[in-house]
Length: 333
Image (cartoon, rainbow, N blue to C red; front, side, top):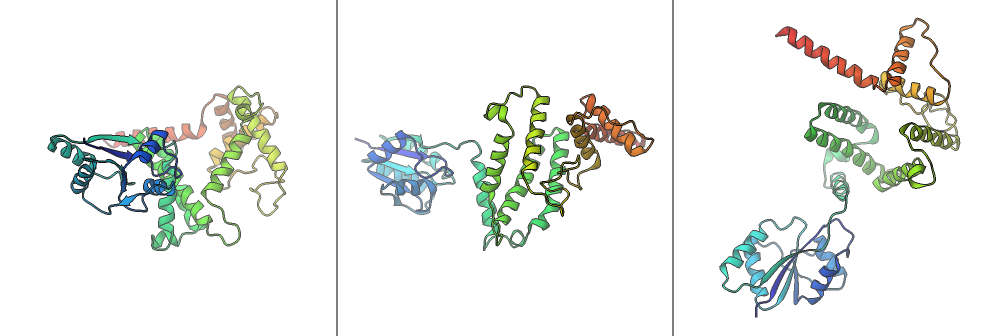
């Protein structure tokens, strides 16, 4: 009586052993468990669980399919998929099934699925490979400081992609921004006295998000965007008050309660103006002082007017620039 061939597939990004119950039952009942190499993630998980795994090494898909089907003619065989998905294997197995008069039963069994965000593990792994010995010489010599210009450039390119409405372009540019976060975090691991890694960065972010959203994760009662924004600023102010002052860094944390606190000096002036106006209003100070005749005060008043209308002043100015450019191009034709 023919045996059975099970192609066990799953995510190489999960923690070892996180297979479904059916997957473990199938492995336990198998006559033989096969895999390509000892370092394959899924095969290693099976081995770590105490099951014997036979490694076949690099074999072409047609040859592997024939070997698997021959073994499954009289036994229950499990093939533990490789991280690359074993290209061409399923097609080769299908050809073998068609060739044989009485083929063994074949099934594809999913042992595990990727969870949302699992591809971020690939980003970390690739970045580590590039930065490690034997990786990329250019990546290896970069520092926090040398990478700053790329962080700024990629952020602006992502913003431009979003404005374009091209979804493929947006996805690509957001990936470039993510690269900068992963790159900076990998560089930080090598600091002699104060190292941190991508998990520390993510952990700090999670703690901040939970702390600043008490209406979601705790007993806060903010129910409108305006209330949420006000609560956010109150929590930020309390966090600043708890940190020591740093006179040498006006944009740093602690002891700086001014309207410009925490706003990078390199931030475009229009964006900085929007943040300052918002802080002025949230502080309960009422309307801005009347412009004194200076152009700067008039620009600030215009930003306040845009905010009152619910308009993004920076976006509106960029839209006006694009319209002007379009008119100029039309005139030339």
